[in-house]
Image (cartoon, rainbow over all chains, first blue to last red; front, side, top):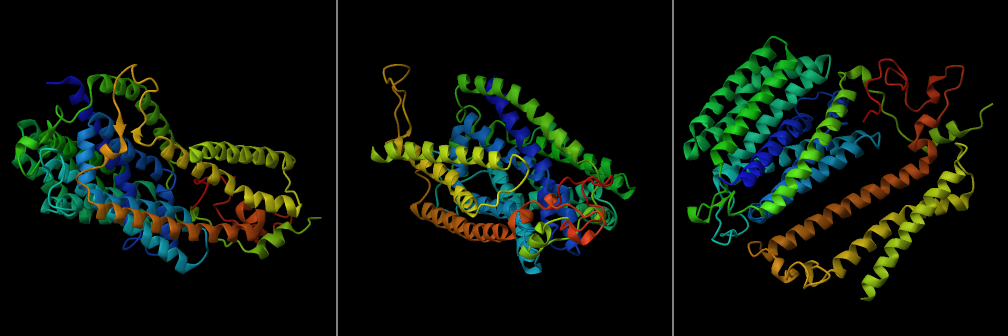
Length: 349
Length: 169
């Protein structure tokens, strides 16, 4: 067994898990802009819970993609080329979501805000679905030929697994967003989030459980099946903690569910990184898709220095913004009109 | 050759202009006041373009300068290796021209839409004056007239013990 490619396979699995744990809740909170939030103040409460942290969370997606590019260039090339159009859609969704966060409050006008609210919720939904579909397909396979190129045209990736994976990440993100809101807000939003969490947990976790179980049927091992069982236990714990009002523990239990579920999925897929649905001989594995040991060794050194730094400053961000946000913390909306400026700049006596 | 020659000089030139403008702005606002000169303000608005000019020129310079390679080879080819990564060989064989065209059109349209929104917002904020961008510069009169502060008061005010957000969206 090759040591360095295995280490980097685990590292990439960890990066994806970290991404889903962190951005999972901000994608979920974004989706909850429609349907959950009842008025503009509530939407601003939602926005301010993720406002200081969402962009830091999104960097984990870049890091996961970047680590794949550097450690397994053939995996990256086949996956990203085969999924060219869906990943373009994810990119557009992420662009609109990101600018919507900033633009939404720049004009004090309900129509303006409504437009960017749609950008936030739809952008979050499409991004979560697309990332989930791509992740599911990298575990279940794409129609790749001997050269690692996609056969069958721009939409050859479309399959039931793509839909299942998309729904899996959308469902998980929604639930994680509810858990985060219950932990991070106060007042009506907090209680409603907890209520929704308890009520919706079984439905929202069904697709991700379906993905994990179907992968066990395809290529599971004893320890990965045990991880699925442990993940179900963690989900039940999360449900019970939320029901009794222990919001912090509910959030952490859902995190444990993700960690175990992700371990069961990546563990079952190992050592294949991207199967070919045309011929198992064309499968990309950690041995035939990885960079040289020299590259991987260098990357290991850089990661050992960089990762602790990232974890420290990201933890610090959450510490700075650790307080709960509620309606009372949202200042009134204000419009920057030249009249206000003129009044304020008038000579003071 | 002309493109890379002038591209590099434009990148450095615009970058230098932006740096000088930033230093000048620091100098004229050193007392925490805003200069009243109209000419200087007009120049400051044009200053917004300088970093964009440097950025665009720099990208065109690198992207055109490295052709026909997708990654430029070692300056001394007899040195470490004999690897030449030509752009023509780097094209993904599995991605169709239609997909590339789609992404080009989609991304250009997205940036065009965002350019319109961004410029409209910039114009709005410039018209609103300095206070529009930095409401914290406004001093609340001592008689407690809360209307004078565009932040609206309430528990979200800076310095309030209950202020959990340094900046509210």
